[in-house]
Image (tube, rainbow, N blue to C red; front, top):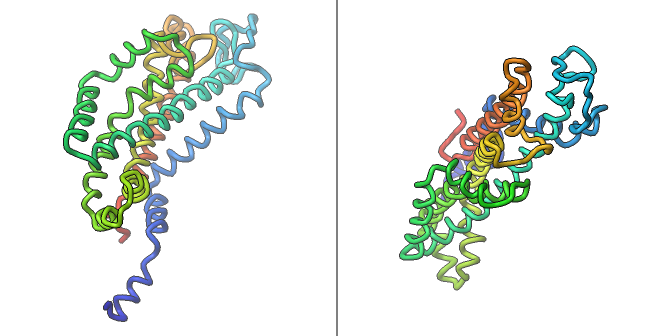
Amino acid sequence: MPTDAALAVQLDQPPAGSRALRRFRRHRLALAGLAMIVLLSMNSAIGPWLLPFDDLFIDVMRRFAPPFAGVHLLGTDELGRDMLARLMMAGRVSLTVGFVAMLLSTALGTVIGAVAGYYGGLVGTGLMRLVDAMLCFPAIFLLLTLAALVEPGLGTITVIVALTSWMEVARIVEGQIRALRERDFAVSAEVMGASDRWIIFRELLPNAVAAIVVAATLIVARAILLESYISFLGYGIQPPTPSWGNMLNNAQQYFDRAPWLAIFPGVMITLAVTSFNFLGDGLRDALDPRMELP
């Protein structure tokens, strides 16, 4: 039995969730990333409703208006459309693709990785060889191939991005489940007659949540970049619906005349992707049980 001193030390230890929160709060870049993500999300969600111009309003008399020089705060594009309104609406589209693709790819990768890690053998080997085969193809070429075969739109682009982003989650989950499969609590549940589904989803996956959350956060950044790639190349979200990627594509021919048309969407992509990467790094450090506060 533990001594009184050992019990006192255990009682003095803060809960695991509290320790994780303290570690996360010490990660300044992660906090900055979280704040930026909240700001971008709020601007994209409610910002377009607060502006006097919508993203499709054409002000012919103010085509190529420069930023900070008139009623259009960030200037206008080649048709006289308000850049701030289009950036906010494009953020709504790009962030929606990022979040929904993250949910779909995380769910798919988690199921495949959990089944492969739990059963092992031929089932696990076959599923992981499928993952390896998918990873052999450069993601951008696989994405462009799929995008060329379907009609572009918000829903189809989101599904395509998800179908090219689940493999890393599957590998992470497979490794976690394979390691947890032999732990005492999993063996005990099996001996007591629990079903495979119960063991996987009620015993093993809750103990792998930390790794899944970190991977999911990074997938959002990847999804935003992939959507930007294919929209920039003309296979993604189609005008007049704006996304940060197709705004960059439209700005190419006007870069020498109106560089802000490319600078602003480029900055938004950079901020969003960098913020999600910082948040993922902070969550990884906070949820890692090997990290201890001094």
